[in-house]
Length: 266
Image (cartoon, rainbow, N blue to C red; front, side, top):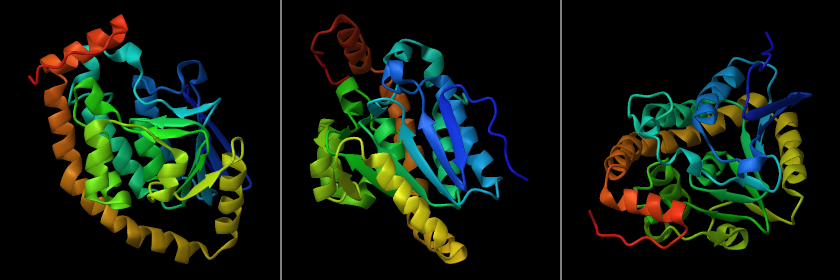
């Protein structure tokens, strides 16, 4: 039975001829992720998994950003850091776990900047295609917190531990061109062409042998699952600790006051 995909507020879902597109839909906030979106990212993968009509999935953003990551408006709300909350770390773990279980291939069309959790969700897709103007990175450490939103899962697998540590410890963003060169993304296209490139690949995969494609993905995802089991809980727990550090509070105040933070290492 087909799934209706009703009730989504921050995600726009379109299904055409077996290809389902998830549009991250908060363009007025750079498609930043808020608690509602976190819950919807937990749910969408379950809905897709229950829909036999989906052959391939495209994940992209509305407007000129893929996703800038967590919404800065939630920085001072302690409820967002409750480890047992469906909006907090338990929810983040569940969203990634559910995503890794989805059978149809997932292609990210990175139509603009992909930052923090936005970058990590894009990179966890089976294939990632980015426009030339996009910047990609995870600047968690610049806010005084551990890069716990699955960065420690997927980055080392894509670029190796040393490059992963370089970018995750500095929080630097990179150009899409560099991301392609080091193997962080699969393909670089001109601005405005990411969705069409993703759709072309989705249609090609749709025409292919479904069982062979899905089971190849399943076998390869065992390695990602292993890394998820190894690093996800640890990185989330350490992120939780740093969210109550003086450095995080200083970074939050500096962000809101539009100044550079002065970190004390505590």
